[in-house]
Structure formats: structure tokens, C-alpha cells
Amino acid sequence: METKKILGVTLAKPERKECTNLLTMADIIQGVNAVLNPGKPPVNWFEPAKDAIAAVHIKDGKYDEATSNPSVVYGGEVSDNEVKNLKVVAYKGTEGGVYAEGAASDVTIDGAVISTAGDGQGIGGPSAAAAVKYGAHMTLKNAIIDTNGRTRYSTAAEEGGVLRVYDSIIYSHGIPYGDDIERPSALMSTPPPPLEIDGNTRTHCSMSNSTTYFYDSTIICDGWAALSTESSEGYVYLEANNCDIICTKSGYGAYADPACHDFFNNCRFDMSNMAAIIAGNSDMTFNDCEADCGTYFALTHCVNGWKEEVADFTVNGGRIHTKKEAVLIKSHNAMIDLDGVDISSDEGVIVHTIFNDDPCKTPADGDVFGVNVNMTDMDVKGDLIHEDPERDMWVKLASTTLTGGIQNAIVKFEPGAKFIATKDSKITLFGECDPAQIDAFEGVTVTVKGAEEATFDCPGGGKVVVTK
Image (cartoon, rainbow, N blue to C red; front, side, top):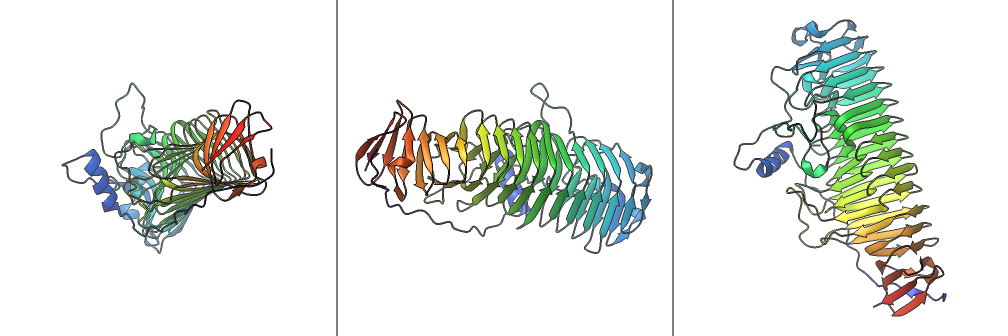
């Protein structure tokens, strides 16, 4: 192969525009109801039942015995800021464990065993096994939490609450579900069908300016979600460190709703479906994590939002294995940074973009930021397939060898990068590329849009055809 440069086409890459619009709870409720319940008044599925009551209620820094439910307490010591060896068994969906509210509340719960059953209502509040709200702080240590019922939350944080969980096991089961069982009809009592999962409860949920940390813990769900987020009201932070995150039947590991920021450090994901779902202008970061996924590693989508929204998805190190595409992007702008990741897909596809079939999807309407895939210091096998007609896919390879196929992407080759095509591919160059950076198997053609028309034979037996 000749050593002269193939000059790439000069392209104007769309700039990223910051999205300053924020969805409130009312916006989300109105939007989802308009699609799922046309002509009906809005239903606020976030609010717990009015008669919900916790076994231990900490309000404004004080243990409020009058509004607590000692009938479900079977042991433990309770004070204003400390709860030791609490034992709770509750069978009604309105009965919960420990609920702290008010900025003056800062309670530590050590050695709790909490078991709750019965169908719940809303997210968090007094009926959750452990929940914080209105600026309260809660530290949960050495706990075992087991919930059973529809919309039955193990832990929750909202309205500026701060939750810290250490060395605990948290498990939610939901109610029986499957192809032969009728799905609950209540709004948001099951995940929306476009998420490609089933179930009827989430183990944890973060909302409305809350902050949550998990350390050295195990978070398990049968279905829907292990770690979820909902309406951020502008900001939500969720972090897990050295945790095992497990979904046994049908669900995801973690969700990042618009304006939510999720971080996972040295965690292990054992997923029936995907490890992550990223929506709107949110971000999710994985540092040295391991994931085995029954479908994707990550699904990204944009619903009820704005065309400027971009999902930021960063993976540093670690090992990822998926049965389907590693990353599936449904009509969404995305910045995907993969650095030193051992990533593999049984389907042989690393990133796949498609047009979103969700009835709540956000239309592009003109120029958008597009999908950006950056790979650094990797040796990866798999395809990059772009099939979203509303936006472009931009790929940057740096010190990376990609073996597979690339369809309909704009590619920048940094020094040390190489593409080995195992199937016919179609790319547009961005910047300069040495012909030695592209190889192709015998019988394979890589069609390249460049500055000059040319044809090159590849060492692997295939060829590169450069067109203007």
C-alpha cells in the first residue's frame, strides 16, 4: 500500500448547545398522561398514600413517636439521631421502615433488618423501607432490607435529602409478572414498554435535588430497576462504590434521568437486561467496573425533552460483556467515551443507533449535535452501525484497533489508530488518514469519502475505495 496521505473531507462539526430547560414533575406528569391517558386529568404517581406511616419517623431532628408506627417494630433502640438493631416486619403497603424529613434531621441506622410487603403507592416517603426527604440526612449501615409488593421501594431520596448506605443488602421483589400474567394498569406501576423490560417495583429511587451514596453493598431487584432516578428538579447525584448490582429477571441496573449524574466505581453488574439507561441531558460514568448483561450495556433515549439534550456516557477501564449490542442509541444525541475498556458483544455490535419508536420521543427538527463515539487505548472487535436518519455519528479512534464494520459514520483517525474491516463498510474521513490505518479482509470493501478518488489494495486482501 502506498504511504501517501488520504486527505479527509473538511466538515463542519455541529457544536454542542447546552440545554438549560428543566423538566418539573408537573411537566413529566402532563407529558406522559397526554400520551398514555389522552383526555384524562393528570395523575401524580410520585406521591405516597396519604395514610402512609413509617415504623420510625424522624422529623426536624426529633424522633416523632406520635407519627410513628410501633406496631410493626420487633426490636431495636431509637433516639433522635441514632437507631440501633431495628427489626421491622410490615405487611401493608402503607407501612414502612425509617423515614427522615427536615434539614435538622441527621440519623444513623445501624444493624437494621426491615421486611415489608403489600402493594405501595408513589415513590419514597413513609412507606419505603428507608427514605429521606426535605433536606434530611440518613446513614444506613449493616442493614438487610427486603421488600415484596408492587411499587414497594426499599430506599429513596428526594427533595434535597442525602442518603448514605454502607455494607448493606437491599432487595426488592415486586409481585409476580410475566407473559402469562396481566400487567398492572395503574400509571407508572410498570416500566414503559420502549424500555424493553418488565417488572413492577424499583429497589432504590433518587429524585428532586437529592444525593445518594452506596458503599460495599449489594442492591438487587427481580424486575424493573435496582438503582433508578426520576424527576431531578434540576439536579440529582447517585454514586455506588464497590457494590454488587444485580437484576435477576427483567430490568436495568441504573438510570440517569435528565439532569441526573450517576457514578459507579469498581462495581459489578449482573444484569438480566441492561446495566444502564441514559435519558435526555444526563451523564453516567463507570470506572473499573465489570458488567455481564442479558441485552445491552447501555440504552440511551430522549423523551419529553429538547433536541439540544446530550447524554454523556463515560467508561474508564473495566470489562463489559453483552448478549446484544453493547450500546443502543434511540434518536438521541450522545457523547460516548470508552477508554481502555475490555468490551465484547455476542451480537458483534459495539454501538448501534436507530430511530426511536417511543411515542414520547423528542423530534430532532434541524441540526443536532449527533452521536460521538471516542475510543482510546483499546483493542476491540465489533461493529459501529449508524441507522438514525436525524443525526450524524462521529467516531474518533485514538491508539485503538477496531476490528469489525463501520456503517455510515464520520471517522477521525488519531495516531496509533487502525480500522480492520471484516465486512463491507462506509465511512467519511474527518481530518487526515494514512492508508496504513485502514485494512480489510479478503473480499471486503471499505468505501471512504475523502478528498481524492483512489483505490488501494489492503494487506488483508480487501480494498479501500476513496470517493469524493
